[in-house]
Image 1: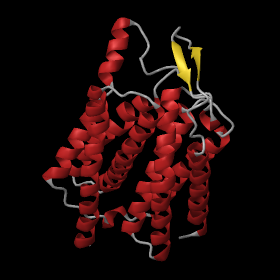
Image 2 (image 1 turned 60 degrees about the vertical axis):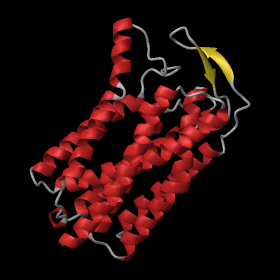
Image 3 (image 1 turned 90 degrees about the vertical axis):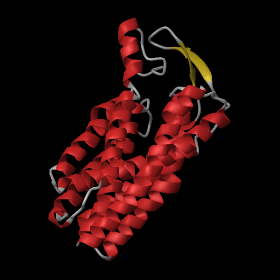
Image 4 (image 1 turned 120 degrees about the vertical axis):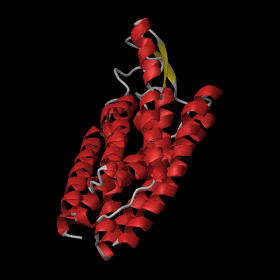
Length: 286
């Protein structure tokens, strides 16, 4: 890798380690307290560590995500950087693009979803490194070399993921519009970053990727690699988040567990399969 790429990767990985490790070390369910939010509802706050000013429910999700980032994603990021440094190619660049995309999603969730804390500048730095690192690798990748023959399976997968990410959250929002009440899960926050990213970006991007695949546009391969990696990481994240919430004493209704957590876990499993097929297909077509 070139020096600029090395620098961004090293900084991004270092920030990921510091931020996620701090989140993991915030695991303490004994400091919770209650407040009345801006909507007049009583909300249980976490009260400990970096997420002390976040709601109890949200903090357990953040910590679950931090566990996944620190113990699964960071090693993957390091391995991908090492692989690309050892022998750079369009395929190794594609893998690096996909991990940068996940880092960008994580950074955006922190910047816009976590209550302001002393790590705010670190969140911004991670967001910037992930964004410009992504641009840097995309610019240096010879997309024309990424020949991929998409099958019906991956197209069905993209439709299911795109529709699921949009429809999973919209009914709750529509209900609040009709009742003129805030989302039950909004707690102390002014908006839901998950809704913004999934409904506004990831879901539509799946359908855009499908359209580009049908047009044989090579950009579809770059988008597909990023989407698959994100789905895989979300699958792991859902497992750890569910464990973290269960240990914290939060009761998850069975319908919600099935419709949201189990669904995303299943999609993550399919993404892992299609991800292996993607790189195998590209390797064979070169």
